[in-house]
Amino acid sequence: MKRIALLASVMIGLWLATSASAQTPTPPPDARPSADDVNRVAANLYCPVCENEPLDVCQTSACVQWKAQIAQFLAEGKSESEIVEIFVQRYGLRVLGEPPATGATLILWIGPIVAALVGGFFVFRIMRRMSRRPAPATSAPAQPSGDEYIDRVERELQQRL
Amino acid sequence: MNEPAPIPSGPPRSAFIAIGAIVVFVLFVAWGLSERNAAQPVSGPAPDFTLELFDGFDGGLGASSVTLSDLRGQVVVINFWASWCIPCEEEAPALEATWRAYRDRGVVFLGVDWTDNYGDALAYLRRFNITYANGPDVGTKIGPRYRITGVPETFVIDRNGNVAFFKPLPITQAELSGLLDKLIASP
Image (cartoon, rainbow over all chains, first blue to last red; front, side, top):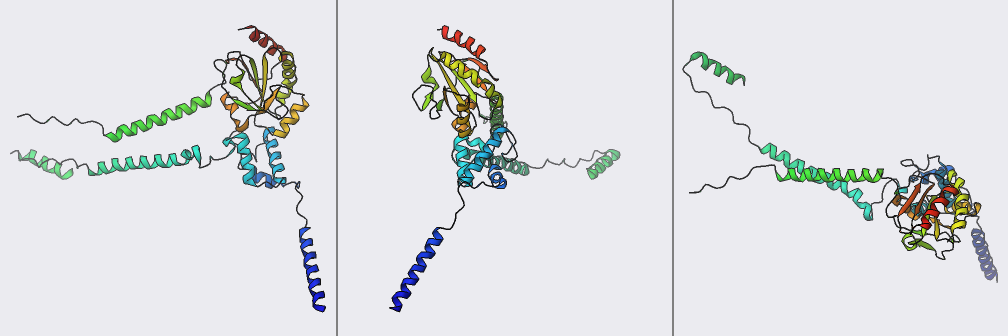
């Protein structure tokens, strides 16, 4: 009987523990994220209205609204990648600081590397060809002219060259 | 006995390839610069687009989206706007009043909401009692086709699908009415 009572008390204890953990308060869905949280997401986004200025430092009305929207999405529990995806879907790839390395924009990542490799190959070929080019032939020793003075000038010129 | 023909000498093949690559690069940069500096269309065929409409803002078209080319035969007023745009607020009542005056005379108004929050955009439409067709520029694809540089910008398309008018400033009811009268009267 004691064992049954012990088992029952353990089961009740477990049930209470489970209930308690189930009622552990979770952050309310409308909890306002901090400005740092918003700016962390905004730093990687660009508003088409103000080109080349990241959203976190842009102060135009449009950017202020976009940041408010980011705050709202964060409060709804959306992750940074989900928010970026929504912005790309709504406003296009131009909101991203750098184009994704997929699809049509992949060429923007591969293109410069291919161009550098092709350019390097041509530079290498040209330099190799230049190094193989024979050195200019040196002039043959002058034949004695019979004039001592001229022969001496020729000899000294050869020494100096 | 014939002597062998001399081998023609000239620039190496790699030089031609290098020059070709430079030409392609220069053309690519020139194309990019011309695209960047291109202005809004003021004549010729209007760039086509499909506008997804906000719920409840179909302007009586009875559809969830509208394609410009499907409106051939009607005069179309395309207005780019945003809820964060203060000058847009200045012209909003004039656009709505003109739409109400011309809606039964073969004129369609399309509001294109540019780089805007949907919630703020809908609040703006309700605030100004806008009833003509309105929708977001999803993916910011329509604005670049018209090469808009900001908002508000208004284009008027004639019955033949050509751009008849463009204004990059708030538009008034008087100037829009005068223009629409002329376009409705023309074949």
